[in-house]
Amino acid sequence: MTYPFEYLKTGLQLQPKGTAFEIILPQIKSYFVGISALNLAAFGKTIVRFITFDKLCQSLNNNTENNDNFQRLTGPNLLVAGTLTGIVESLFIIPFENIKTTMIQAAMVDPKTLEKTQLQANGKPTFHKPTTKATSVTRIEKLLPTVKHMYHTRGLSAFVQGTTPTLFRQIANISIQFTAYTAFKRLLQGRNDKSSSVITGLATSFTLVAITQPIDVIKTRMMSQNAKTEYRNTLNCMYRIFVQEGMATFWKGSIFRFMKVGISGGLTFAVYEQVSLLLGFSSRT
Picture 1 (cartoon, rainbow, N blue to C red):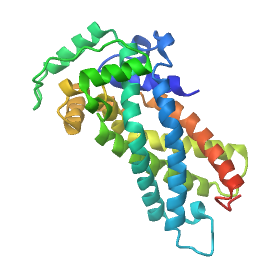
Picture 2 (cartoon, one colour):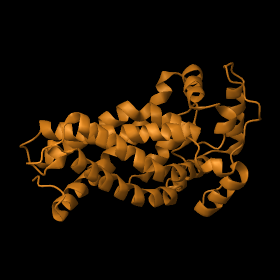
Picture 3 (cartoon, helix red, strand yellow):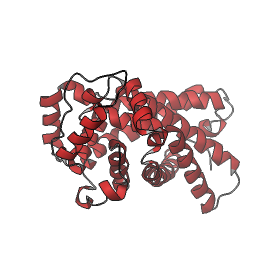
Picture 4 (cartoon, helix red, strand yellow):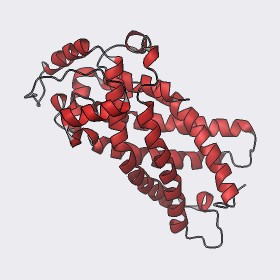
């Protein structure tokens, strides 16, 4: 349901120049390329996220007289629970994120155009001068052929590219998401109408995207097929984006990510609350 927004967001982040209308929107047939990799990761990630977070909330809840771990957990403990949850779920998604990014990059870009762009970017002075020629992107859109191609061309390291920014992004995501959600929910406590749920979801999504989008951009760049020829490391990637493309690039694709996070986050928390009540994980109403 939300994957086209993920495709548009990732596509924009991979491009040094251009808008969605110029680069991505004409590629309507490719809007679901990479969804297979994301779906494989989503199942395990979602289970791990909520089981881990709920168990950590139980462990960190010092109020033995109240079993409502989610509502009664203090701010610092809530942040710790969210951070640890982010670390755990990151272990599941990094290989799948690399596969997804490779598939999107291959589907949306003409290899000749991309190679020309890379060579122009490589020519600008920075403290890192690539020693190898920019890598052209192979157009391949199916899951298993993509995995095979990644292994043969880049080895096992292709599946762990961007580990550092992904780890930081996931920690920030889960920490900010649960913390902001709890904060906004408490502000609207007592209101059980549908508008309060919508406001909570939108406010949480906006906060999440506004704070973590720069990390998401760096993560996408470090997972690209040509990352090894473009960037020395994560800090070098951040430096080159800032120097060559400007500060605004760190928030590229934020509108599409907000749409994706807003819809998926709202659905996720709605399901989470109902399942928690059914299974007796929480006493809240």
